[in-house]
Length: 270
Length: 252
Image 1 (cartoon, each protein chain N blue to C red):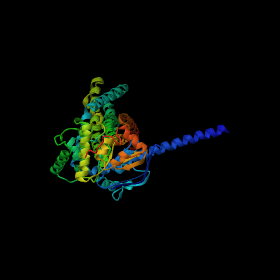
Image 2: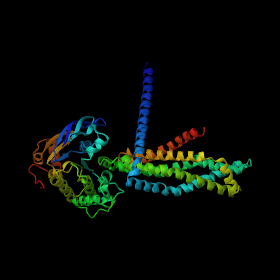
Image 3: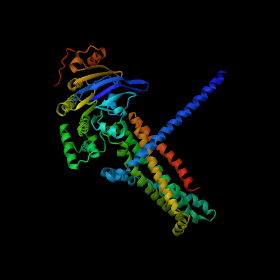
Image 4: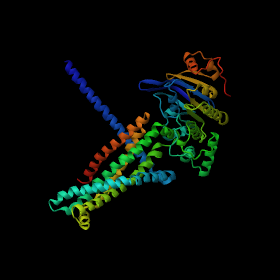
């Protein structure tokens, strides 16, 4: 009898834990969605506020141009690795001419947005989380609220607008560089002519690949910004809290990019 | 002007504010004293709606801030200025831009009008030559003065001060005290000051409230506070070497 009571107690504890965790996740998701909708609703200020426009342009430069170096290297090498790996296998079947198609389609649909998303989550997402987290713990966010300056409008909206604009462009840039890197490897390692490489690449690629990749990158930009903002504005306990918020922002963004990336692909290609 | 009615706030199972009743009169400077963790900063956060009580009501004039949201809350907050303990200046804006921030974001004033007003407020706090400096280039006392200039730039009816003299040297502390007193004397501002600094409290307060475990255990004028026989008040006074017969004299 005591064993039965004990096991019932354990199972109730488990269900209570699941219930509490589910409610907590639902609350976080609900709050994040409300903040996201609020940030979108403030986009109208880009038309009326000179400061909002100037801040957004500054952030575009900071997020986009300043990320170009690392994206260039990562994208070029991603394309080169893709070309080398697929080329070696395709050579076994005398089909190395298809390397360009494999690289272009992979970069446009998946690797371009994916690599861009990961790089921006690690660089821009962490920077947003650290900055806003520091502002939260040093009462700067509270100061904005007291001045009736909405932090979502003042801090989050320009970051969201900038990321929504630069992420698809960077993904496209990254895809182009990957294809370029792949072309060099295909030419030097597989002996494939540039014309053949690009000719076969363009035969297989579709404009749908480009806009689906662009949409995916756009969505990653929204996710990275909103996760970083949401997590960091809840930061407490000084430097330790800022560190935790930054780490959480990067980890959650990585997971969100992987999971959302899969569902977007399955939505458009099944 | 500010009225707490049976305000109770519980955090982590402890009553930070316990059935608090308090009335801050228009034009007075009420100083809230108390040991760390007594609920002083929480009191200020309730006044500006950064925290909401579990029960009770808090009126700013005729408006109940505990039930105000959105535009209504913004309208009430527009009547208040807040000096944060660390200044809470935005790091990427210079001193002048920090003071100009509420004007740029909330008014339709022209740039030259904003600049004139910002220079006027910076002159009031003695920082007219520091317009272009960044917050990281100025001292803690200067940061607090910039924060004060920002708090009063919209000409609020109420200014709230969270530990305005903490971490400052005695000379700078007295300058801040003079500024707070000037706000009341020259501009008729209603002030609530949270501090540990008894010298400051006795200099600037028209009334002093002693907060202990979320309850107000003493509410009196500075002169009455010095005569108080409440043991916890006496302990607080003794800890800063202030006695009934001591050399303390009001600084004004």
